[in-house]
Image (cartoon, rainbow, N blue to C red; front, top):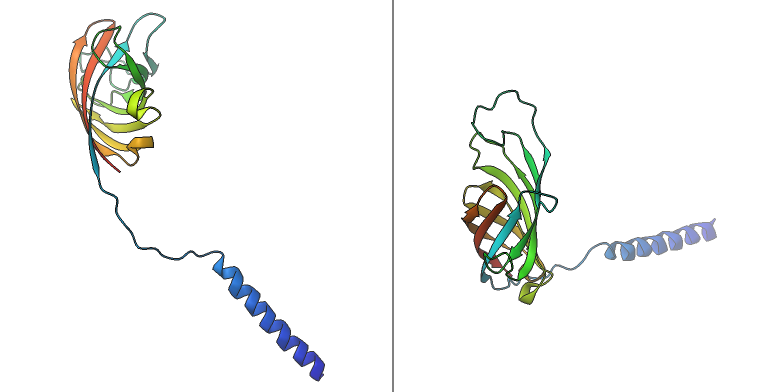
Length: 182
């Protein structure tokens, strides 16, 4: 009996040591937070959108089936667009491509000039090659920057939009973007 009690005691001590050591694997030590300095970056580029033909870069993917068009727009309330537009250095169609804007735009209001938009602007050349910024906001000549990756990681900020050219087949929008990132 004494041998059984001693063996039980040794087993309890061994199991408590194993349990204590295994718990250490699941927890890390707390380290002090050392904030990195915030960088401010200003970007300037043009988004070129082709609305017509087989090379369209913005297309309607869904549309409401309302019977009236109370907002007197050629594109009614509830229309969803998918977008894949090139980003260029200048407004000229042959200016250098520096990336692309992919996303969705929803006409979610009765004003045909205002939409709710999500864009991811991916850069493919230069200092920010492989980086991107995400914008999600109502578009009324300003978009909110809500994130970024790569060299623009954790970006926040805003983009001011200036319609440069709008006609039946082409939309060119100038972007002045201010970013705060690490």
